[in-house]
Image (cartoon, one colour):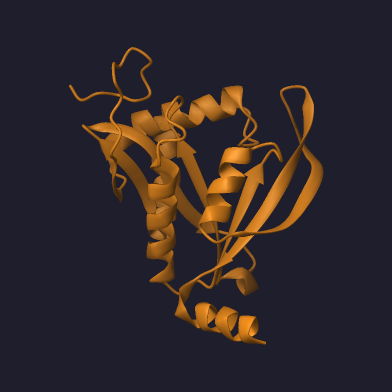
Length: 193
């Protein structure tokens, strides 16, 4: 049986992940990874951890919309996952997406988030989308904020005390990044003045 990075008894978790499309076999590990954040952290405002079947259904909706849903895997262990969804349901938002990235507990700081988010951005740039928004739960989530900043996301705002979880009011940080060559040219032209 492959190593499982979500199992605390796994010795010497792997370090060099391969990023690939998620498959149905990945969703027990994905559900465990997400459950950690639901039950112990402020990164998501969900308060009841969904099971693997619900996570498979969410994956199916993402893929049906033509958006990527990725996992980082090493030695058969799912180390993290990332996906994009529509930013909002209204049709004028159709060229804007939102990213989500979750890393197995204890695996932060090993480049897994960077590998996942870099590949997610690359795949989204190949599509019709122009903007990607990071909606980061908890203004104290320094790791996620730094990861997004390293990959070109700009801080665009904070929604103060919009969530209440684990007995406290929680902010949401908004970060934004342009996608694709069109916007890269626009940014370069703006920089030249």
